[in-house]
Length: 129
Image (cartoon, rainbow, N blue to C red):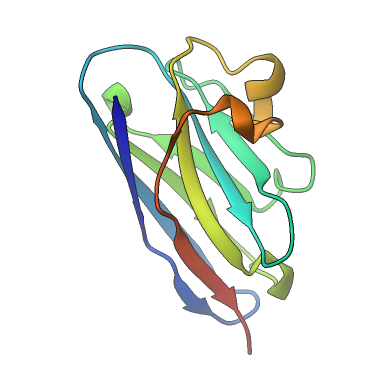
């Protein structure tokens, strides 16, 4: 079992930055593909980026220039640095995990969110002037 808890969301003006954190609690050791996702009202959940145990990252094409996913050793905390935020970045942001060594196939960049069985409750990010 994996429990995830996001923090760091809030309101920011366009052009601003935020750093989201996700605390990861695991009942057993293992290797995980960790990811960040977001969901805006009325839209489907969207993958932003993933990182595997070895630190290999993948990004959705539209996210790679302004978003940066990192993790600490042991995958106990996941981070998402978001820069030059835009109004269209307003959404609920979620971290997720799947017990797999590499983020390949549908795990890559979170292309298939349904492949991730563990989710946090989300943290709201609002970008507005």
